[in-house]
Image (cartoon, rainbow, N blue to C red; front, side, top):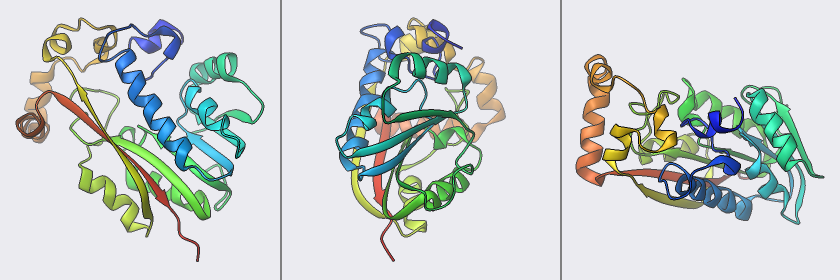
Length: 244
């Protein structure tokens, strides 16, 4: 996928092809940029992996830091990587095609950024453990997930998280929380149902039937609406792997 086919879906942000004024368009891009700005502030000097880098704008942000030695932007999509190489190639950035994090040796990077990735995999705890293993002692991992339900609406997501479940991933590995970024995105249920915004065309079709097959997802959605209203909430955490 390239060009508008990517920006018309919920799967990937392509800054050059987003509609202005849409919650799922440039407003969503601002959330992504805030996460990468947060990551850049907390990344240590040295060699950084940006896993699931998409079209590469975040890798370029990380590489623009004076302390950056090398940013490796990795993604499974050939088309996303082609876009990245066309638009964001620069000294200090290497874009590679890779699935997961097992292709790098343990303790080989100073920092890892993986934003809006864990909700896409069946075994997020396993992927998180791989990311932790890549860090050198004192290294930093920055990751983010939605902490309101997303699996029901987004067919690319397979795991829902609560804030507590996400925080527990780091605690399980003895990581220390350095900082966190909480984000709230309001959306119009009318635009989602009517699919009036381009990227909402990717919202899961046949939701009533989906809820009949997955009643737990329905009740998670109801609970989230009762507590938070029509908002999506995201949590980004910077964790440090302590030396020793």
